[in-house]
Image 1 (cartoon, rainbow, N blue to C red):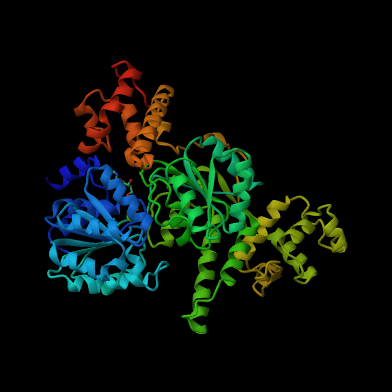
Image 2: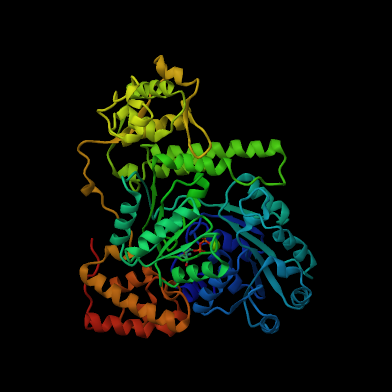
Length: 617
Ligand code: ADP
Ligand code: MG
């Protein structure tokens, strides 16, 4: 089988995505490769396709048990013999698996890096032909990456011990120079073909919202997205627990995940989510790595993360299947303070001396600043992100909240002057709520108690809303005219740069929706099935039901049977025979043999053997 036949036969796809073919060709010609592609770009296929074409066994080193399980299940569903070797197996299972492997039962074997040193494994590896060693999530090898795994350093010793050096391929979504060089050096890649694809994820919509109530927004959003899978990231465990309880009381099928839960609870939550029993996940950033669920239709950030690096990685878990999905960040005045607090109060890394620690703190503050600007910019959000990662974008994307909403710049320098005066009158004793309340002349017991009504600044901005005033203060904080204390009170002072505003050398503006802006113009898709007609959606739901049943029987998550995209394509084409079914994107030989007839049966019954037009133009 050539590479196209392999792609179609096992995975059901007709064409390669950007970069895949180059990497596959290089591997097949015997060259080492390093593939750097964003989350969801399809890195797995880059080694799975050649693994099925090379003569011997491919070993895939992967950092997490859940990742291995997910990949092996998906391969088995596609009719590929694959297995994993890690600490989740009993000794007997391990021996058995190695026996089968030695007999050549598996083309692809996933293995935890710790295993590579064990005597049994080395013995096995020296007896069989290993054509390729693949290092997935290869950034784990770098001490500078976010997820350094010391055990990854063992990989290279292992490769050296093999009787014949196999092709070595490495994959990651982390694109920094340091990490890239580390991977090439530590793994001792030989003249590798390094391929970096663009970081744009076109199917993702990016949005920043500042709703009056984040809870109400989230609730509404979930309601509007029916049974779709979504992740809601919160900054702290406490936030997760609170939101989780609220949603649960409203009967949302929700689960939660954070480091404060027991390992067993976490496993349970993760499974509920992956198997679609609870399609909504509320979690801290502890959740995510190792989740390859491809049909996550939205990722909401309930709080602003600490950097765009984090944001893009977390948001990128939406829409891995390439179908439309949404990434929405709910921004509020407190978020910058929370993030700042978390950065300044995290545990010190004992391996760093004080100079290094200071350097990292400064770097993280810079990252936080860039993240904050993202929440306030009126430019195309996608361009902002890609620029940050060093890519140019010529035209606005048209698929982000800034492109779709009519924002305009509003000069707020006069108000900023009032803010500075007020803060100076308070001598830095108060936080954003008291200051905004004072300026707007709010009628609150607290303000009276503090004697704010006596200040000359009281009520001078009463023509603005408190929210509007907070936005201006936020902007000034980000631009460095104001500074907040890093304790939990976040008391605000002015900096010496504030004088530049007072004497008119600097101006400040914020973004504002244009008066004639109407939400109706905004038309977004988050669902593969959104392009279907009413009848089409009916059929989609029938097929989705069948998928759930089959997944239960097979003991795998539904998305591993067929993706939403495949089901949608079935609705559009309404295949009536084998040849037509095999034309559907995501239907390969093996899946056809196992599930094809049952899906065709439902389709025939629904459309009575005819073909209707089921998609909207
Ligand atoms: P990554 O590891 O880069 O984050 P994955 O390998 O998990 O991404 O792939 C993401 C999704 O894209 C999977 O559902 C996979 O089946 C799908 N995919 C990969 N390559 C193709 C392709 N050529 N055509 C269609 N879908 C693809
Ligand atoms: Mg991957």
